[in-house]
Length: 224
Image 1: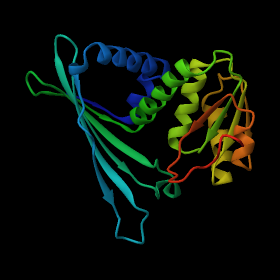
Image 2: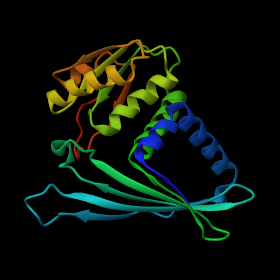
Image 3: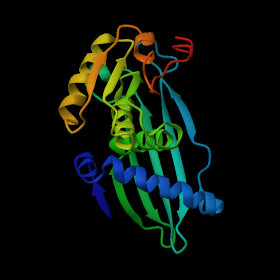
């Protein structure tokens, strides 16, 4: 059994590889709908009755995957902790197990924080690849939390000609921190990043709008 911590996962998983793998899996699932079985995830609210904590959730997500020769089970356990940013910790924490269904052997236990961020972002990248024009020049990022960080990387991976990024976040400081961190960690992208005071300013001239928030109400309208 392999134990893969966050450092190992981050070192070996990149966005292009994730996009390619997930796109291939989606094509395979379309061709063989019964090869992947993923029941609806179990969601349990946390701290719903505790006013000292922000309510979050715990999610259990099992799936079986058959590849034509072997079958595996992957189970992801996720806890969403809205108060974690104030602790300098990610909002979403996760762990993933992978087992061989022939023998039941656990093949790997791995940190799921980065995998969750990259997997969600890779789907945004795939959607961007098929639903936007190839010559897009700008993208608006609405919501600058942990998920948005990799989603912007995914959008730029499939649309590398983008030159301008507009950021908007409810907390202006969060957008400013996002800008600094992204420019540092992804210096390979030749982009200009602007932090916007109003969401309308972020989306007005954007060719692509990427939304990653926990908002329960609409943040903007199409006529903005």
